[in-house]
Length: 68
Image 1 (tube, rainbow, N blue to C red):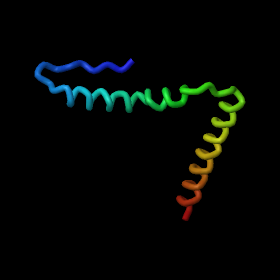
Image 2 (image 1 turned 180 degrees about the vertical axis):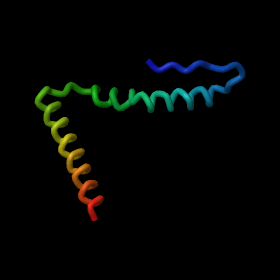
Image 3 (image 1 turned 60 degrees about the vertical axis):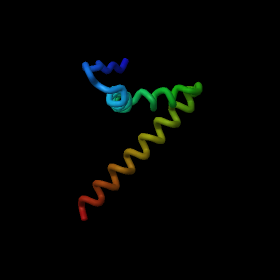
């Protein structure tokens, strides 16, 4: 759970800005969006496998570019 303590004399806007930043750092909104709808286990596996493939392609490409 994300918490932000309010300092004495601090404006609401600055507290809200700090809260939004903390929520973004904790990746809460992306988790909420991901869990908004039920995802079948087969879809989860497929999504994770695609992410792994993207990551491996990216690292392979970076390694290739380092050689030249």
